[in-house]
Image 1 (cartoon, rainbow, N blue to C red):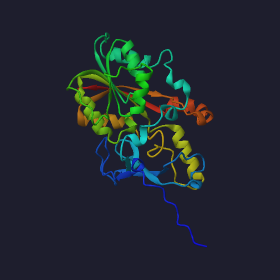
Image 2: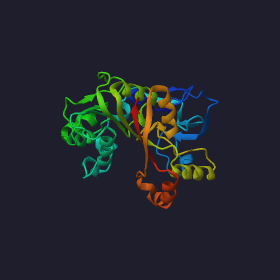
Image 3: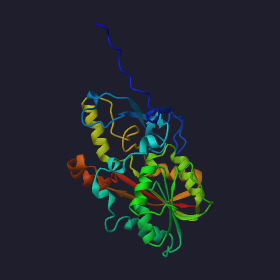
Image 4: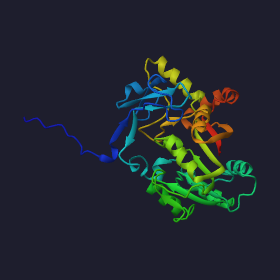
Length: 316
């Protein structure tokens, strides 16, 4: 009997990666490898509680000794943004309720932005970077801002227009790297759960600052490098005899590349020209981990070790 050759599927360029080895911290410029610590490895699939039984490829997860930033090295960069994000929004956000705008959505952030900008925001320009399905654009417009948005995923942008959360001429289909606005054009810019997805947070913040007027406010919400639940899960993996860690998800949804500390922004601001005006810590939500989060919440609140870090930055 003739042996059949192994079947190899056609090469899919959309799923191909190139890998960039970092030589320094993108936030504080601390040189690597001496300036970082390898925390462990992360699979290119959801790890669950027994990642050692799964098949896949890994990238190393590091923590910068200079500012506490957590990231991956080598950094996996797909052949196109669409490889990660040109997917059905219902697949990316699996909860149907996500597509509704609940009462009070982004209201706390808008109130803080108003206070930091001096009160009245009617006519002030705002930019929502990584607009997704456009919910921030809608509520910022309702609050009186003159709002623009950037979204690199065609499927997400199309959904925003379909839901009438954003007007097509105000929601630009482009990556931050491709987008262009006049210098000092905006009073308020928000990266709401976006910066952790971008390959160079340093470049992204520098470019946003060029678009922001002096004295303007930049709002950034990101995963915190101090999240207590992650430390507990890392300990669990160690006790099982593996070096896996739960930080980041560079090659599977939601494709997080970074976790930040306040010190990351303070040191970066010294380089590029902003100050940390306000800091907040938010609990976040991960359904499979609800019992553990409930148990650890008092300690997280006491030690500022919640899931999400929010910084309000003012351009000098």
